[in-house]
Length: 464
Image (cartoon, rainbow, N blue to C red; front, side, top):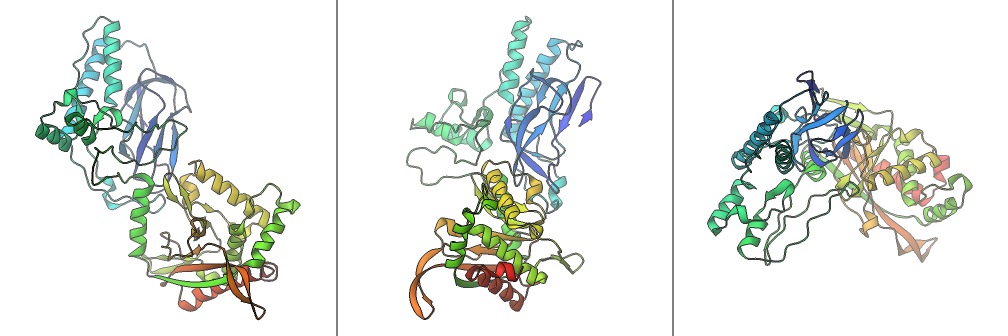
């Protein structure tokens, strides 16, 4: 935030998580002319890992929104300006002229701007080398600014500013030209009044058009496919936000850390019985009690018995960094994509405390309110693919972590128990680890310990 004058103040896109280089504006909660107060939330943005609401740090009247919803903005860019001394005398004609100039500038830039390559990063994993490059400035929320300026001009007896030409990207303009479509006659369905390819196709040969997605304050926005004409053979979905960051992180992890995955199939019948018993325990009343809770506790005990597995690789210093704490990550599928918040200092928690932490983590993730801090500094992770009916998988490490445990579906299967084949509750575990940090012996010991605890959960007491 910088003070451009005694009257107008500008609020910049903040770094809401360590290493953040950009964020997408999901929703504006204010418009030019609205009164705001210190601490009032003015917009919601999506970082590489979470949706975050941004409060304005002063009182005043919104003067300008620099970017429309759906725009990805660099950290440090001014996103909103506020008149902190409204009514101090700026001529209306000057304001109208400024609004008209913004409309014209935005339309020209929408036509001429070319996309710039960027290196997305996960929150907490450092700034990419290209983070200092600036993306061409996109126009201030054009329809709102133009409409507001026109209304204000009419109320004050001035001529309305000229209407901007239709907003469309260069490829869309070319398509319209090739099809002989006047863009001025096309009804836009894109964000902030931008004409899409589907809009042009619809104007050329009317076809059923899907209703626009309702992205209200209560709904978590997710990337959606552009509306396609009937009979389209392909659909393109923009990759941004969480999905974009996850893709970059997984590629980086897969081709940086040498992965090894080991598997074990285990009889967890006794663990399932213990889960049912714990549900009736008064100390666990009101807490989330499920197999994942005991699996998490088993992994924590295994790490305690094999502490060298809880480490990270420092490439710059060429050192192995042993962690004397466990921040246990839990992979969570959300409408926005896969996120991995972690339970801080999980190694110090009792079983009821761990259950409470798991419950909070899951409910927060489902609501889309997981903070960037909750996803930083994880050491090991659990991913429960069994909830999808999958037997097991070969999970990819989260960047900076040493191991990840995949838990498969728990099913009744024929199993040799006490010399006889009986139906038992069985699951398959898979442990992926960084072979620079963890050799085969250590990885096998950790996985074997987890399996042994789940087979005989009383070991949670004797080994803890």
